[in-house]
Image: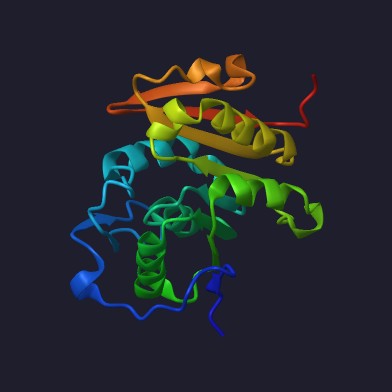
Length: 218
């Protein structure tokens, strides 16, 4: 049986390449390297560019194998699929935009319908709060958390974004890694425990990486 699992709000859409997308990305490393990732061209999706994703995974590559990947604000699902391609144990993709969920479905099915992913059709802020209230449902593996939201959320919901990052950072088990992507003009030093993050600039984006070696203390 396929390992592809849908969250409770994701409909079982039929794939239709003719109207599914206006552009293509590609998986840049691992066992699915070179496989296309379709996206709609809708600005809501704003997928991370191939070269930025490649640079990011070059930066965090040693942390991917065996991890439970969380692709928050998943868009096309390219980051979660990339993590699976590079050896993550499972990927949980969270996305609220209904047309984009269909694209994620198509991308998973077209690349490998046995891929161990779970797609959650939900508002990411709500989903994270619910998820963190049920530790018994957490993956047993260390986490690899990608938080790559629409850039406007850093401006319009700054406090909510910082709370989301802080809650995932606190809950993540030791040997986890968190990645946050923002527009290059946003001050990522607003992140909780900002002195412990590593920052990289990949125009037009900035990336912050937190390597959690142990449980956090005040």
